[in-house]
Image (cartoon, rainbow, N blue to C red; front, side, top):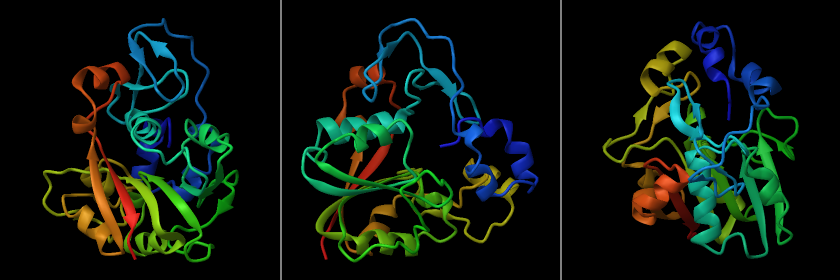
Length: 259
């Protein structure tokens, strides 16, 4: 997750900065120290802190998005709530692969004694494994649980990565996957052939995204051997709890490997 992408977006859109260059820059991942905000009615379920307001985030300066204590965004808070309060996935003994691990979640997952946790990232040298999601260096059925949030849209072709995720997950294992998803978009809008960061920014809202996922995404997951359960935050949590945790309308896909 890049925290200050807005500062670099002109250079990226002009083609002057590659994804590898940007995602290796630690200063774009590290949050600057900020003055503590007053405590209030908003609550982050990831770090447990409360605040009167959260910080803006994103190219459009989305209001009340970033937890001022741990740096979680809406999707991270939704994922954490789902994993910890609506499933038993983090209470079982499990081998876990976490792709492009979020700084707000990684230390909390790594600290759980029942998990054999491994992080994977293509660019980050601090990850346990540096590898391409389309060519994973693991045996078939090696993991019990996979966590992958907002990674697949960064790949020109996501199908090899989906096949690899299914391959390294044991039969009956679970993968919890999040992507930029629009349930009202009938078919995923693809841009794997688009080489211009400026065009990707205009079409997909991010210079390193190659698609906006639509309502056919569950079928794409099922095609590689997953039994898919879409989970929508609006159906999981009441409006009061969504306001309490500052959650926007979001989806995750709880996938069980069925073959």
